[in-house]
Length: 333
Image (tube, rainbow, N blue to C red):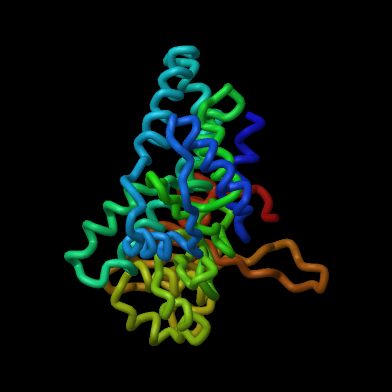
């Protein structure tokens, strides 16, 4: 539907917030909830800083998230559900919010976890930080739900205006704390956080998330990727981090430089196997393109195949969804 792409852009928006437009949206949200407009706006550079400010500010009043977000949200969902019926609501959600939910919900969970980890100085402080995060309205990261409600005469226009112009925000009776949006966001083709030379999500105060193809990694770990050796890869005890190392380094390069020996070869290619402690074997088939490049050379490709593969033919066949005995190409290309 027409609203999905615009809300996908909102969810991925980076750069400075439009503070005036966001504050107008907050005021509208308060009025729509039957509340007096807030007396004060306090801006933060990130959700982490916002939590720190909320912990320090006094005389802000009670949280009004229930009136601002929870109750109107539930009322609008019930109204649309009653209007469209079960099948109609399911179709609407599938065409709108469901397309954004997985990436936005996962990102919000990652941000929460990082805020807790960096804001709680002691383990016993974590519950207090988690409670403050429950007071947050997710702004741009509420895009999935807002896409479903958009264009239907919703009472959520104030929430939508804040989401289009700012990040997370904390509504209290007298004070609203609002976070800026991220400065940078890097994702792979599947929409997962992904960057090999810095934070995949970063805010102006230095708060950020580090990830490689969606998997959380320590910042120091990424800094070491450019100086990897086969020995350092083998020495990594964490199987998931070792897999990241191999992907970054290149399986073919690792095979070449680690002195690996082929375990099988036939007319289809060469089968290689890397045994890894605490993890499944990495099995690759080396194949040569029969069609020459413009300079007359033949390009070599490396195909990752399941650990159970025992012959090169079985590996190549697997890439076509076939069994080895069924793989008999009439012509190579």
